[in-house]
Image 1 (cartoon, rainbow, N blue to C red):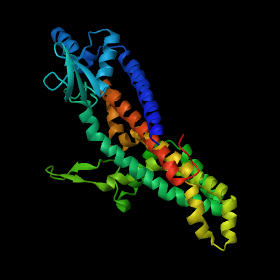
Image 2 (image 1 turned 180 degrees about the vertical axis):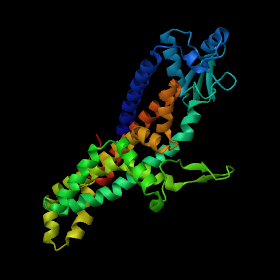
Image 3 (image 1 turned 45 degrees about the vertical axis):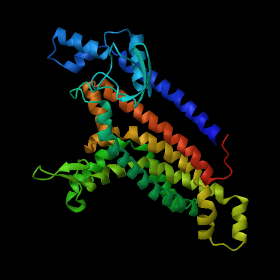
Length: 357
């Protein structure tokens, strides 16, 4: 187990390094001056020079890349004389391990730098304010997909090749083929506008909103319903079809025949033996969809005005706020890798036949 975890962590670090490099090349080789993006139309030449010096934009590309890696690394080398990409009184917020002459080694949280458009606000603060809302939306969406998808998959498998099975597969295929942003528009119009009088739902809104007097922040759980359903439609369709096919395969195994021969009912066979062993492909799909939801929620959040990381990414793209885009991509990639490692460990708990190499 330990050797497997170390191997997976090593692969994860290499993957993250590749993501970091690609992100740097994509965003820092774009035409344009980052300092001008930060200052807007009110810059002077002296202000631009000062800003370029502060953030190291006047350095060579290789030097900027090294500073970029140094910022993101939990172990960072920090010059006590020349300050680039620093904060909190010119130093990283971390614990000093040791220093040699003018270089100090510190352990710290990865530094994602500062937003270009939010008056020097740290990207970590921007992500910290929006990521929990996106995580909540993704969890609720995957719960909707699991609850409905597993039930539909079992029903389809028990009614193989009849009209019930064909109807569920038709609906599942339609659910997978319709883009999330299109579903979001349809659901927002129908349930949030046209039928608002009956549903009590709104076309847009975030989790936390000011009350009618603008004095107190209140939690609006109803604003979570429509985006969670829309975001869960596509994984629901995948889960129902995977569960159907997997359950049909498991039901043909010899131990299922033996269970029937012992006098167990169909319900007992499915719940005690078949259901658990049919979950492996579903877990794979759920893990992939949950991680991709953090990125795929972009347009859904924007359409429903849900104050999450996806909506923040769209706004950052519109304003060319490169640090926010970079930080969001790196956070999503890290979560994707962590979730995949956890899913690999869950396989062993669900299926004893799976061994860790």
